[in-house]
Every structure is written in structure tokens, then in C-alpha cells.
Image 1 (cartoon, helix red, strand yellow):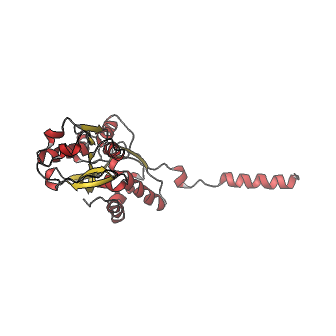
Image 2 (image 1 turned 90 degrees about the vertical axis):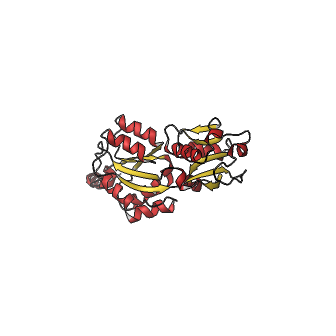
Amino acid sequence: MPKPILRALASIAMVVHMLPVPAMAQQRGPLVLAAASLQEAMTAAADAWAARRHARPVLSFAASSALARQIRGGAPADLFASADEGWMDDVEKAGFVRRGSRADMAGNRLVLVAPARAPLRLRIARGMPIARALGDSRLAMANPDSVPAGKYGKAALSALGVWPSVANRLALGGNVRSALTLVERGEARLGVVYATDARASKGVVVVGVFPAGSHAPIRYPIARLTASRNPEAEGFRRFLLSRAGQSILVRHGFSRP
């Protein structure tokens, strides 16, 4: 190749090398620890935030109990979105929440679901024959000893007077999505999940909605963590609480706080 062309190519390469790297490429988005039931909604919110020319948040989903343990163990996360107030209280009392950053982000409902290929009819009411409806199968739900969806489920079934009939017939999941999967696969004839989980699945049908008074209100608090060092974290938190962020959550079946 002629030397003049080589010199020109070298000059172009040097100019390209010296061009500033866009800030978005240099910057990692905030790390968000979010309850498993927020998966679709939080992913959509992260996409919307990135479309506004921000670094896309890094999302990690699990049971709120597991996320709270990660935070207390020193996880370098920026935001925590819990499926109940109890686990947010836990990390806040331990000193991991930035003062003034906690706010209720969304609400939800609790539903009873069955596999779409084997739907059941069962009216949710006090004394309902849920054990008989299960037959030789089990009731899928998140662990009621620690996972918010499981705790809400146990409270609702207890309020309706049917918990003793199913307490020894549970198929437990580590989070609400695990319980949902058991029903989708037909490994459990019924399951207790959030309304938003049922909405996101084509493999289940809603048998009924638990009365709001049968369990504590389902609230999703969000807060910035004391370990947060990402400058985008506060902006994304505010976005989730804004009209635009709330519309995304509502579109995915959540209620406004």
C-alpha cells in the first residue's frame, strides 16, 4: 500500500482514538436489588430510563428476604425495592438505608391461580374447600416464614380459616416466581401469588382474588442504600416515583402507592 495512504490511515486512527468516550459508555448504571415480582415492570422502567440517555440500571431479582440478607452482608448496591415493609424495616433499622430516601413505590393484590390447562372453580371465601380442590396435589406458595408473598398468603388463608387444612400440603418456592413456576408446570394444582405475577404468565389462570382485608396491605417500598456511590441512583429512584415511572408500574398491573 502506498506510503501516503498508510500515513492517512494512521492519522484517522489517531483521531478516532483521541475522541472522547461518551459518558454513558464510561458509566455503569446503578445496581438495583428488586423483589422477584417486579421483574417485568422494573425491566421496562430501566429500559425507559436508558431511553432518556442514562446508563441502564443493573437489575438483580430475588426474594426480598434474600436481598435484605445480601444488603446486610455488605452488597455494594444502590437501591432496594422490597415486596413488603418488613424487610425494608429490617435493613433500615440496621443502618443500611439513606435517611429520607424511603418511599412507597407501588401496591399489589394477592390471588389464587391454577394451571391454564387445568383450571379450577373455587370461590374464595371463609371456609372454602381448598383442601378438597387440591385433591392429591399441593398448594404452591413462597416460603411463609420469610418471603413476603408467602407471609401474605399464610395470613390470608388463616383469616379465611383454611390454613390448617393446607399447612402440611405446601409446595414451597424460594420466591413468588418459583411458586408460580410450579403451577405453570402443573406440579401444583393451585398457587398463591401476586396479581402481577399471574398477569405476566400465560401458563396460569386466576381462580380468585383474596379479600384485601384478609392480609396486610401489599406495599413495595424503595430506598437508596448507604452503600450507594452511583450518581444515577437518586435520579432513577425519583423516576420510579414520578408520573412516568408510575405509569409503567400501573401498566404492569401494580397499583399506585
